[in-house]
Image (tube, rainbow, N blue to C red; front, side):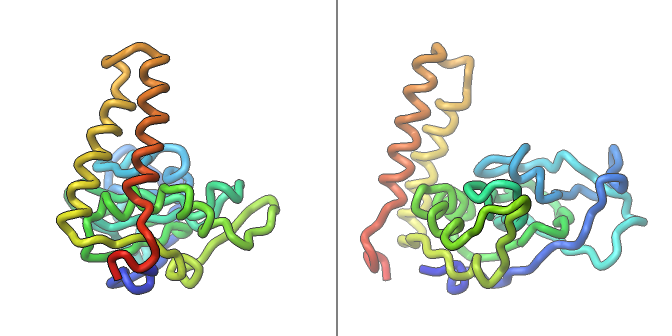
Length: 198
């Protein structure tokens, strides 16, 4: 199913300048943080902005998917993550927010697969800065099984994710083996035959 069919709303954030960031205030996400700070999901924003600096703010809430639509590398374009925290946050200018009714972590995991990344980078030309857009994002296709199946896949992938990212459980070689196993199962669990859930 295409993201255009899944999305209830899709919009671009508003600009947030680096020199406008503060220690406290309204939580916000700038597009670069999607590459450098956040993975599949996050529940706390690392950046804040003073309410007095916000003009025409575009906000996201728990369960919304965020895309970075500007980047330096083709392979990273349209990297996404899902916000699982409480309270609204401000989206930066090169961030696209997608509202939907599916399991948010499922969507985020599905958008991190090799197939989804191939779709995101298709037709991109190497330059200093690479851009995507809402119309391009809406064309991306991911499998959408019934909600119960989405929930079970998320449960399994969250368990693997915790094992892979908890350095207190296991030796470095064992952790690397788990990471490869996690990637293998993520790809298998999120690769459905065309129209299997149409």
